[in-house]
Structure formats: structure tokens, C-alpha cells
Length: 125
Image (cartoon, rainbow, N blue to C red; front, top):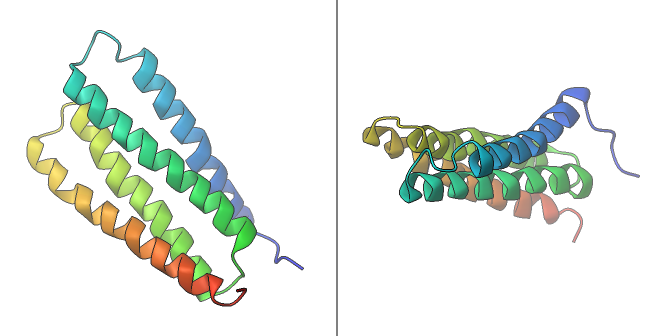
């Protein structure tokens, strides 16, 4: 039997998915003709990673067994969304170029989250 999910975890998973849709729509519609192609490409990359990791959060909640590894994986996916995608969104909106230096930190969080998810899977495979 699957463990129930806390209200805060359920809220964060829903927020991650809903915000991915909102940011994607914003980039597709509000930016048209207002920013250059490079900024649109940066925004698109942020949305793509945001979406994939919102789905990873959802799948992790549903499919990974409760425990420390799952908790760590979900936290790192959330941190990755905020830091990786958030920094790309900021760059696309005109943040100083040096701001991109934090983007790899979010990428490392994503990678570590996938490793934690794999560790969690060891319990069910």
C-alpha cells in the first residue's frame, strides 16, 4: 500500500506543474516580438527543465517508496527547478550575465535528485 502524501508535498507538486504551464504560456505569448531569439531560447530551456522535473516530482511521489531517499530526491528536484529554471528565467528577462553562474548549481541539484531517486528505487526493485 502506498503511503499518503502530505498536504505540503501535494501542494508543491501541483505548484511545480502549474507554474511550468504558466511560464511556458507566458514565454510563448508575452515574449513574442518583445525579446530576441537568444532570450526566447534561454526561456524555453528553463521551461523544458521545469516541466520535466515537475513530472519527476509527480512520478516520485507516486512511484518511489517513502523514506529518506525519496524525500531527498523530491527536495533536490524542487531546488533544481527554482535555481536552474529560475536563473534562466531571470537571464531571459534581462538579469545581469553573471547571474547565470548559479544555473549549474540547479543542474547539480537535478543530477543529485536523480541519483537519490535511483537510491530510493533500490527498495522496490
